[in-house]
Image (cartoon, rainbow, N blue to C red):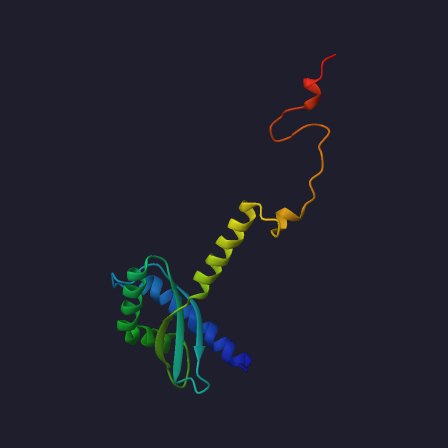
Length: 146
């Protein structure tokens, strides 16, 4: 179980790393990267940094490689901005939760559009509309002969 202090340290590291990656890295391999989370070991010697990378699989791999090569610079930024007894060594990992969330969202949208009876839209009972089909603007009373 993570203590309140550990959560605060993780969040402070996430903020510092996000800013350092966005404004300080000049490596062309590092594309649009978002730091989604940091998990430090209880002794603060190691930190796993989870990132989301916008782009294709090769662009993700290039960005992670660029981050790994810049770990010394990023550790130095942490040491400068956070007052910790030990600056943790950083390891970068791709956060797949964003991909999973996008996939689930796409599946839900597809289900809603398909009109599947098990979807939330399919649960509404169909009732005759005496005033006509509001979507088409057609009123069946206009068809009646006087």
